[in-house]
Image (cartoon, rainbow, N blue to C red):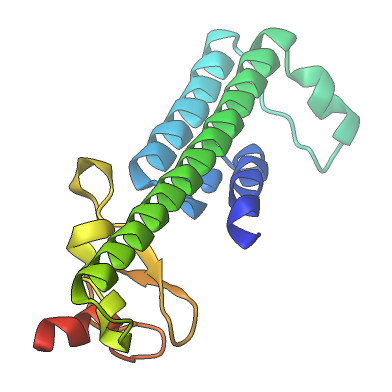
Length: 172
């Protein structure tokens, strides 16, 4: 359930500050790109339309009157596109994780049936066999001890420092 809310949270945060939604999804390049696009576009539009700076503390009503629609509308559109992109990237991450989990479960079943028994070590497979994502990137997996997400390349959970099952399987 928590992972289902990440795209919505990312979209809301992208509306608050340009690139913040993508940062929560750990998409550093996209976050920087959206931030530079929105801030740079806003600065360019303000310079193009020669908008005079207004002190928002002196007269708050003058702020909305000082920004022309030709500037506010494109910036608002860029914010909306950034939020939509953050939402769609978050949904794609969830779908990728679900596919990786399904592949890992299928691999575990295959390994367990090949061993011929349901021993505790039978379902432990190395992460490279079932948990690598597209483009060769490593996905995160849940630690069986504490339940928090950890990097599948590690042999231990960086939260609780317990060894992960595939680290024990490699030691045999």
